[in-house]
Image 1: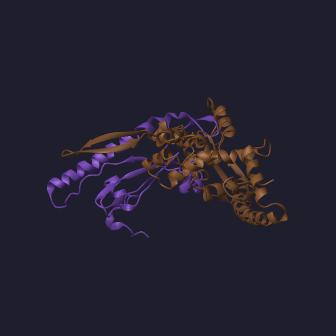
Image 2 (image 1 turned 30 degrees about the vertical axis):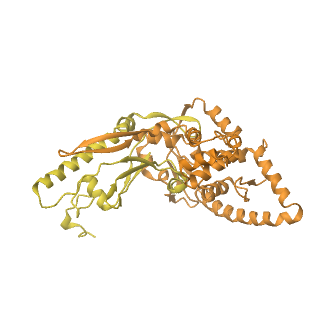
Image 3 (image 1 turned 180 degrees about the vertical axis):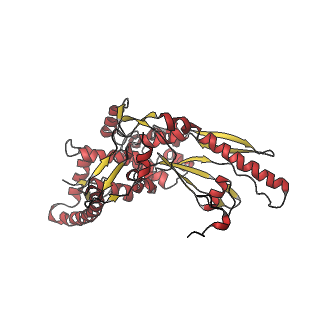
Length: 139
Length: 255
């Protein structure tokens, strides 16, 4: 029912970290055309300050930041948690009410975004559990 | 009888092609208004819409007689081209059979006041503006990124005719614009704070469920929305995977 895009934008020294949301009920041609305005800005995430790799304190801070991000997402998607199981009567565009189960099925993100979202190592695979040194061996 | 685009001179015989034209050629127009005009044109064969007839009259005046047929033919050529393009798109899935998920996307009731709202849209497509001119001026202001103080200046210096456009300052124009989007309460912003041990960072979010309800409620998507999963097959019985709702995931998740 919803289908999400996650982007990172950088301009100058200012950063924004937007999360977008749209619905899968629209055909992709309609959903993806800019004029249809079917993609809504869902959230602007907090951006942690830059941290160095060497310092122990900063490494600890990095861990805290990753956990905080998960909490933020938990808050943002809290409204969908129960409704995805129980369903909800939603007014539809044709003037009818339907029992809808809004489920978050897909997330579009680039590799670095996946690393940040899932708390991975940069060289790990975001889709599977194959260890880094075995990636590509079974091709 | 082809419907004529109210915003330019092209004519369309198929609603799909016409809708595509509205979407691409006039993408800057407000989406609610675009859909309104589309419905009116669909209905114009039954009840004649005063706006459309007015436009046809003015066209006849500008190029009367056989001389006028030339640009119209040109328009029809364009219309024909885009018609065939859309036609191909539309026929491919309908060539074979489709299996629908039993009971999915069932209607459980009517939305209160929808008929009223819909008939209002048809009766007065320019609402909340009181005329086409009022709407066009507003969209010119916004697309041209005219600053608020300049808009106020425009009216205070007497350049604009506030009577005929229906607003006389940025403030009244903003009130009109707010009415254009009656479901904006779904899109309210919230502010949150995160504490990372050293500093407090702000972040902003909307209600995710509200966003979904807002999108499902848009009349502009009325003809596009898909409410149930289905399997599509071509003429040889091969399964077609096209949109999200024709694949397996929707089917498996459906309760």
